[in-house]
Image (cartoon, rainbow, N blue to C red; front, side, top):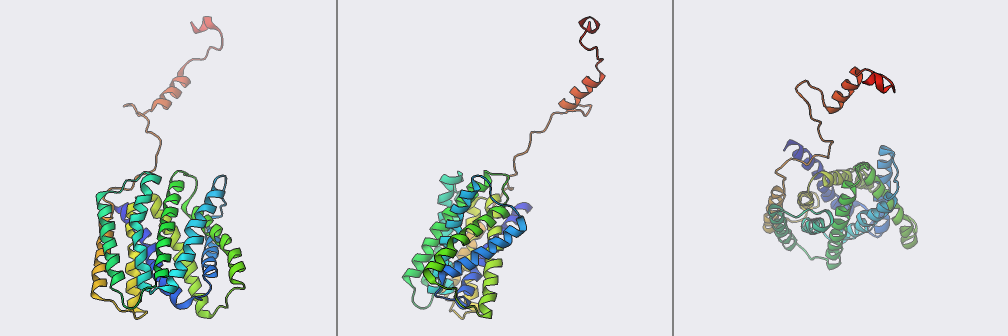
Length: 326
Protein backbone atom coordinates (compact mmCIF):
# COMPACT_ATOMS: atom_id res chain seq x y z
CA UNK A 1 0.00 0.00 0.00
CA UNK A 2 2.87 2.37 0.74
CA UNK A 3 4.31 1.71 -2.73
CA UNK A 4 0.87 2.29 -4.25
CA UNK A 5 0.57 5.62 -2.46
CA UNK A 6 3.91 6.79 -3.82
CA UNK A 7 3.01 5.90 -7.39
CA UNK A 8 -0.42 7.51 -7.08
CA UNK A 9 1.16 10.70 -5.72
CA UNK A 10 3.71 10.77 -8.53
CA UNK A 11 1.03 10.20 -11.18
CA UNK A 12 -1.13 12.96 -9.71
CA UNK A 13 1.56 15.50 -10.64
CA UNK A 14 0.52 15.17 -14.29
CA UNK A 15 -3.21 16.06 -14.13
CA UNK A 16 -2.56 18.88 -11.66
CA UNK A 17 0.04 20.39 -14.01
CA UNK A 18 -2.30 19.90 -16.99
CA UNK A 19 -5.17 21.56 -15.17
CA UNK A 20 -3.03 24.65 -14.60
CA UNK A 21 -1.82 24.47 -18.20
CA UNK A 22 -5.26 25.48 -19.53
CA UNK A 23 -5.10 28.78 -17.69
CA UNK A 24 -1.49 29.50 -18.74
CA UNK A 25 -2.24 28.71 -22.38
CA UNK A 26 -5.44 30.76 -22.43
CA UNK A 27 -3.94 33.80 -20.73
CA UNK A 28 -0.34 34.08 -21.95
CA UNK A 29 0.29 32.16 -25.20
CA UNK A 30 -0.48 33.55 -28.69
CA UNK A 31 -3.98 32.45 -29.68
CA UNK A 32 -3.49 32.42 -33.47
CA UNK A 33 -0.53 30.00 -33.59
CA UNK A 34 -1.76 26.61 -32.29
CA UNK A 35 0.79 24.62 -34.34
CA UNK A 36 3.74 26.66 -33.11
CA UNK A 37 2.30 26.55 -29.60
CA UNK A 38 2.19 22.74 -29.71
CA UNK A 39 5.66 22.42 -31.31
CA UNK A 40 7.30 24.80 -28.84
CA UNK A 41 5.70 22.88 -26.01
CA UNK A 42 6.84 19.43 -27.16
CA UNK A 43 10.27 19.78 -28.77
CA UNK A 44 12.17 21.61 -25.97
CA UNK A 45 10.68 19.24 -23.39
CA UNK A 46 11.75 16.22 -25.43
CA UNK A 47 15.27 17.56 -25.87
CA UNK A 48 15.59 18.22 -22.13
CA UNK A 49 14.58 14.64 -21.32
CA UNK A 50 16.92 13.32 -24.02
CA UNK A 51 19.79 15.22 -22.40
CA UNK A 52 18.92 13.58 -19.08
CA UNK A 53 18.55 9.98 -20.24
CA UNK A 54 21.12 10.07 -23.10
CA UNK A 55 19.51 7.22 -24.98
CA UNK A 56 18.17 6.94 -28.49
CA UNK A 57 15.61 4.53 -29.92
CA UNK A 58 16.66 1.14 -31.25
CA UNK A 59 14.88 -1.33 -33.50
CA UNK A 60 11.10 -1.14 -33.35
CA UNK A 61 11.21 1.92 -31.09
CA UNK A 62 12.00 4.21 -34.02
CA UNK A 63 8.57 3.49 -35.49
CA UNK A 64 6.85 3.25 -32.12
CA UNK A 65 8.20 6.63 -31.06
CA UNK A 66 6.84 8.20 -34.24
CA UNK A 67 3.39 6.67 -33.72
CA UNK A 68 3.22 7.64 -30.04
CA UNK A 69 4.60 11.08 -30.81
CA UNK A 70 1.89 11.62 -33.41
CA UNK A 71 -0.93 10.51 -31.08
CA UNK A 72 0.19 11.70 -27.66
CA UNK A 73 1.99 14.86 -28.77
CA UNK A 74 1.35 16.23 -32.25
CA UNK A 75 -2.39 15.74 -32.61
CA UNK A 76 -3.15 15.91 -28.89
CA UNK A 77 -1.26 19.15 -28.23
CA UNK A 78 -2.87 20.95 -31.17
CA UNK A 79 -6.35 19.90 -30.05
CA UNK A 80 -5.66 20.96 -26.46
CA UNK A 81 -4.26 24.29 -27.62
CA UNK A 82 -7.38 24.96 -29.72
CA UNK A 83 -9.70 23.94 -26.88
CA UNK A 84 -7.82 26.14 -24.42
CA UNK A 85 -8.30 29.17 -26.67
CA UNK A 86 -11.99 28.54 -27.43
CA UNK A 87 -13.25 27.49 -23.99
CA UNK A 88 -13.05 28.89 -20.46
CA UNK A 89 -10.47 27.19 -18.27
CA UNK A 90 -13.07 25.30 -16.24
CA UNK A 91 -14.99 23.98 -19.25
CA UNK A 92 -11.88 22.97 -21.22
CA UNK A 93 -10.45 20.99 -18.32
CA UNK A 94 -13.70 19.28 -17.32
CA UNK A 95 -14.37 17.86 -20.78
CA UNK A 96 -11.07 15.98 -20.49
CA UNK A 97 -12.42 14.15 -17.45
CA UNK A 98 -14.28 11.78 -19.75
CA UNK A 99 -10.90 10.13 -20.41
CA UNK A 100 -11.04 7.60 -17.49
CA UNK A 101 -13.92 5.72 -19.09
CA UNK A 102 -12.30 5.89 -22.53
CA UNK A 103 -8.98 4.64 -21.14
CA UNK A 104 -10.67 1.71 -19.42
CA UNK A 105 -12.41 0.69 -22.63
CA UNK A 106 -9.14 0.95 -24.56
CA UNK A 107 -7.14 -0.94 -21.91
CA UNK A 108 -9.45 -3.95 -22.02
CA UNK A 109 -8.50 -5.17 -25.54
CA UNK A 110 -5.01 -3.62 -25.74
CA UNK A 111 -3.44 -4.65 -22.41
CA UNK A 112 -6.02 -7.17 -21.15
CA UNK A 113 -6.97 -5.06 -18.12
CA UNK A 114 -10.63 -5.65 -17.46
CA UNK A 115 -12.05 -2.66 -15.54
CA UNK A 116 -13.14 -3.45 -12.01
CA UNK A 117 -16.50 -2.48 -10.57
CA UNK A 118 -14.87 0.25 -8.45
CA UNK A 119 -13.12 1.73 -11.50
CA UNK A 120 -16.35 1.73 -13.52
CA UNK A 121 -18.25 3.30 -10.65
CA UNK A 122 -15.55 5.95 -10.27
CA UNK A 123 -15.68 6.70 -13.99
CA UNK A 124 -19.48 7.05 -13.96
CA UNK A 125 -19.42 9.25 -10.86
CA UNK A 126 -16.62 11.35 -12.34
CA UNK A 127 -18.56 11.68 -15.59
CA UNK A 128 -21.55 12.88 -13.59
CA UNK A 129 -19.31 15.49 -12.00
CA UNK A 130 -18.13 16.53 -15.48
CA UNK A 131 -21.73 17.04 -16.60
CA UNK A 132 -22.52 19.14 -13.54
CA UNK A 133 -19.46 21.32 -13.96
CA UNK A 134 -19.89 21.67 -17.70
CA UNK A 135 -23.58 22.51 -17.60
CA UNK A 136 -23.26 24.72 -14.53
CA UNK A 137 -20.66 27.15 -15.88
CA UNK A 138 -21.49 30.74 -16.71
CA UNK A 139 -21.51 32.10 -20.25
CA UNK A 140 -21.78 30.39 -23.62
CA UNK A 141 -19.99 27.21 -24.60
CA UNK A 142 -18.10 26.95 -27.89
CA UNK A 143 -19.16 23.82 -29.75
CA UNK A 144 -15.88 23.63 -31.74
CA UNK A 145 -13.99 23.93 -28.48
CA UNK A 146 -15.92 21.06 -26.90
CA UNK A 147 -15.39 18.94 -30.03
CA UNK A 148 -11.66 19.66 -29.90
CA UNK A 149 -11.53 18.57 -26.25
CA UNK A 150 -13.51 15.41 -27.00
CA UNK A 151 -11.19 14.54 -29.89
CA UNK A 152 -8.19 15.11 -27.61
CA UNK A 153 -9.68 12.65 -25.12
CA UNK A 154 -10.06 9.93 -27.75
CA UNK A 155 -6.62 10.42 -29.28
CA UNK A 156 -4.71 10.64 -26.00
CA UNK A 157 -6.53 7.73 -24.34
CA UNK A 158 -5.67 5.39 -27.19
CA UNK A 159 -2.09 6.69 -27.34
CA UNK A 160 -1.54 6.35 -23.59
CA UNK A 161 -2.76 2.75 -23.50
CA UNK A 162 -0.66 1.94 -26.55
CA UNK A 163 2.37 3.39 -24.73
CA UNK A 164 1.54 1.24 -21.69
CA UNK A 165 1.34 -1.87 -23.88
CA UNK A 166 4.69 -1.26 -25.56
CA UNK A 167 6.51 -0.09 -22.41
CA UNK A 168 5.42 -2.99 -20.21
CA UNK A 169 6.42 -5.55 -22.86
CA UNK A 170 9.88 -4.06 -23.34
CA UNK A 171 11.78 -4.22 -20.06
CA UNK A 172 14.95 -2.57 -21.37
CA UNK A 173 13.22 0.72 -22.33
CA UNK A 174 12.92 3.18 -19.45
CA UNK A 175 9.97 5.49 -18.97
CA UNK A 176 12.15 8.60 -19.18
CA UNK A 177 13.66 7.48 -22.49
CA UNK A 178 10.37 6.52 -24.14
CA UNK A 179 8.79 9.80 -22.98
CA UNK A 180 11.72 11.76 -24.42
CA UNK A 181 11.42 9.95 -27.75
CA UNK A 182 7.68 10.63 -27.98
CA UNK A 183 8.02 14.33 -27.23
CA UNK A 184 10.96 14.79 -29.58
CA UNK A 185 9.27 12.90 -32.42
CA UNK A 186 6.01 14.78 -31.92
CA UNK A 187 7.79 18.14 -31.89
CA UNK A 188 9.78 17.32 -35.03
CA UNK A 189 6.58 16.29 -36.82
CA UNK A 190 4.87 19.54 -35.80
CA UNK A 191 7.64 22.01 -36.62
CA UNK A 192 7.60 21.79 -40.46
CA UNK A 193 3.81 21.78 -40.49
CA UNK A 194 3.76 24.92 -38.34
CA UNK A 195 6.25 26.64 -40.65
CA UNK A 196 4.22 25.74 -43.74
CA UNK A 197 0.81 26.70 -42.32
CA UNK A 198 1.50 29.56 -39.90
CA UNK A 199 4.61 31.08 -41.48
CA UNK A 200 7.15 32.76 -39.24
CA UNK A 201 7.15 32.03 -35.50
CA UNK A 202 5.08 34.43 -33.40
CA UNK A 203 6.82 37.23 -31.50
CA UNK A 204 7.45 36.38 -27.87
CA UNK A 205 6.84 38.73 -24.98
CA UNK A 206 8.57 38.09 -21.63
CA UNK A 207 5.32 36.71 -20.20
CA UNK A 208 4.91 34.36 -23.17
CA UNK A 209 8.47 33.08 -22.73
CA UNK A 210 7.85 32.38 -19.05
CA UNK A 211 4.58 30.68 -19.96
CA UNK A 212 6.35 28.45 -22.48
CA UNK A 213 8.91 27.55 -19.79
CA UNK A 214 6.11 26.34 -17.54
CA UNK A 215 4.27 24.60 -20.36
CA UNK A 216 7.40 22.85 -21.63
CA UNK A 217 9.24 21.93 -18.43
CA UNK A 218 6.42 21.38 -15.92
CA UNK A 219 3.22 20.62 -17.86
CA UNK A 220 5.05 18.52 -20.46
CA UNK A 221 8.46 17.10 -19.49
CA UNK A 222 7.72 16.51 -15.80
CA UNK A 223 4.02 15.76 -16.23
CA UNK A 224 4.38 13.23 -19.04
CA UNK A 225 7.26 11.42 -17.34
CA UNK A 226 5.15 11.11 -14.17
CA UNK A 227 2.06 10.03 -16.13
CA UNK A 228 3.79 7.28 -18.11
CA UNK A 229 5.59 6.07 -14.98
CA UNK A 230 2.19 5.69 -13.32
CA UNK A 231 0.78 3.91 -16.36
CA UNK A 232 3.63 1.41 -16.19
CA UNK A 233 3.11 0.62 -12.49
CA UNK A 234 -0.63 1.09 -11.89
CA UNK A 235 -3.78 -0.22 -13.59
CA UNK A 236 -5.02 1.94 -16.44
CA UNK A 237 -8.34 2.47 -14.65
CA UNK A 238 -6.58 3.88 -11.59
CA UNK A 239 -4.42 6.21 -13.68
CA UNK A 240 -7.44 7.37 -15.67
CA UNK A 241 -9.35 8.24 -12.51
CA UNK A 242 -6.36 10.13 -11.12
CA UNK A 243 -6.76 12.23 -14.25
CA UNK A 244 -9.95 13.63 -12.73
CA UNK A 245 -7.65 15.95 -10.76
CA UNK A 246 -7.24 17.78 -14.07
CA UNK A 247 -10.73 19.37 -14.03
CA UNK A 248 -10.55 19.93 -10.29
CA UNK A 249 -7.35 21.95 -10.74
CA UNK A 250 -8.72 23.76 -13.77
CA UNK A 251 -11.95 24.80 -12.10
CA UNK A 252 -10.29 25.91 -8.87
CA UNK A 253 -7.58 27.82 -10.71
CA UNK A 254 -10.09 29.42 -13.04
CA UNK A 255 -12.10 30.56 -10.04
CA UNK A 256 -9.18 31.82 -7.98
CA UNK A 257 -7.10 33.49 -10.67
CA UNK A 258 -9.19 34.04 -13.81
CA UNK A 259 -12.26 35.31 -11.98
CA UNK A 260 -14.58 32.66 -13.41
CA UNK A 261 -17.84 32.07 -11.55
CA UNK A 262 -18.07 28.82 -9.53
CA UNK A 263 -21.70 27.82 -9.18
CA UNK A 264 -23.32 25.41 -6.75
CA UNK A 265 -23.66 22.78 -9.45
CA UNK A 266 -19.95 22.99 -10.16
CA UNK A 267 -19.20 22.50 -6.45
CA UNK A 268 -21.26 19.30 -6.52
CA UNK A 269 -19.39 18.27 -9.64
CA UNK A 270 -16.07 18.83 -7.93
CA UNK A 271 -17.18 16.64 -5.03
CA UNK A 272 -18.21 13.87 -7.42
CA UNK A 273 -14.92 14.10 -9.29
CA UNK A 274 -12.93 13.69 -6.07
CA UNK A 275 -15.15 10.74 -5.13
CA UNK A 276 -14.27 9.14 -8.46
CA UNK A 277 -10.56 9.54 -7.70
CA UNK A 278 -11.04 7.91 -4.29
CA UNK A 279 -12.86 4.93 -5.83
CA UNK A 280 -9.99 4.34 -8.22
CA UNK A 281 -7.40 4.05 -5.45
CA UNK A 282 -5.71 0.62 -5.77
CA UNK A 283 -6.23 -1.65 -2.78
CA UNK A 284 -3.49 -4.21 -3.43
CA UNK A 285 0.23 -4.05 -3.83
CA UNK A 286 1.89 -2.97 -7.05
CA UNK A 287 2.63 -6.08 -9.07
CA UNK A 288 6.38 -6.74 -8.83
CA UNK A 289 8.46 -7.42 -11.89
CA UNK A 290 9.21 -11.02 -12.75
CA UNK A 291 12.30 -12.36 -11.02
CA UNK A 292 14.16 -15.61 -11.23
CA UNK A 293 12.70 -18.53 -9.29
CA UNK A 294 14.37 -19.07 -5.92
CA UNK A 295 16.69 -22.05 -5.64
CA UNK A 296 15.96 -24.84 -3.24
CA UNK A 297 18.28 -25.14 -0.25
CA UNK A 298 19.05 -28.02 2.04
CA UNK A 299 19.54 -27.85 5.82
CA UNK A 300 23.29 -27.51 5.24
CA UNK A 301 22.62 -24.15 3.54
CA UNK A 302 23.87 -25.21 0.06
CA UNK A 303 21.67 -24.88 -3.00
CA UNK A 304 21.72 -27.37 -5.91
CA UNK A 305 24.52 -25.59 -7.81
CA UNK A 306 26.69 -25.28 -4.71
CA UNK A 307 26.28 -28.98 -3.87
CA UNK A 308 27.31 -29.98 -7.41
CA UNK A 309 30.39 -27.75 -7.20
CA UNK A 310 31.35 -29.22 -3.82
CA UNK A 311 31.09 -32.77 -5.17
CA UNK A 312 33.27 -31.84 -8.18
CA UNK A 313 35.95 -30.38 -5.93
CA UNK A 314 36.09 -33.37 -3.57
CA UNK A 315 35.89 -36.10 -6.25
CA UNK A 316 39.37 -37.61 -7.02
CA UNK A 317 40.64 -37.03 -10.54
CA UNK A 318 41.86 -40.11 -12.45
CA UNK A 319 42.04 -38.74 -15.97
CA UNK A 320 40.94 -41.11 -18.70
CA UNK A 321 42.15 -44.43 -17.22
CA UNK A 322 39.05 -46.62 -16.60
CA UNK A 323 41.03 -49.13 -14.47
CA UNK A 324 42.05 -46.45 -11.97
CA UNK A 325 38.48 -45.17 -11.82
CA UNK A 326 37.44 -48.65 -10.89
